[in-house]
Length: 192
Image (tube, rainbow, N blue to C red; front, side, top):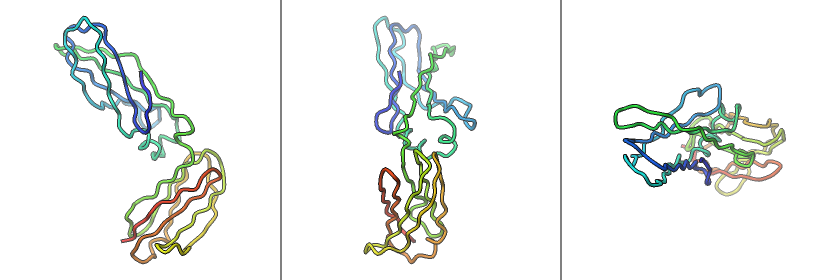
């Protein structure tokens, strides 16, 4: 089975019997046009020979957070697939059934990501929105003084904005606030 806990994906499986089983390789597939190959994530040593139930668990750390920042993933589907490559001592192998995690809208809903940080020139703001909407972007200095305030339209899914004017700021600490219909999020920025 596969499940999500916070930003991690957890893959669990149980064997009833193992005969000459050497290792389990955990593989992931993103259902998108840009990723059609299974990626081997890690290995877990098998019991080898066993006639009792054995439980195994593999954690794919921070996969949900990292995928929510990936434009190619967001523009396609929100499903992650996992399978096991079960390798015997003689090198022969079989694959398990495929399990999946469907990332609901709540995971991808109205998030912002600002990069690079620290910055020296341009700053990019990725806005992941659950709907087409107008958002307010406010930039403040360390004292809270408003440096800029703008309204912009974003589409459902991913919008990437180049905040080129921020390259002209003096070295220091700033705060960028993105206000959507549902929430307000503020990120600290450091200008070098």
